[in-house]
Image: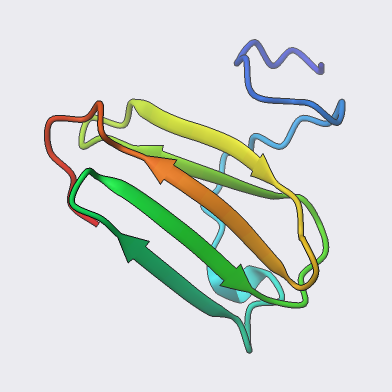
Length: 94
């Protein structure tokens, strides 16, 4: 893949890794709504309501830059839904 040796979750045969940082202003998130519901056991239910229809990569990093979570989300009827399990991490700040 163009010399990129970084293994990523690439279920659609596209390399979604970028050198830049993606900001909400870069995508169709002008009227988006992000809802985060957490529980006592470090499980976070994320719901992003938006009209953005492309694959949405989500990443969570620790303070050293190590990737803890990476996944590609698919729009499901006007929203992206993801259950983020951080129970294996010793400290969570969200």
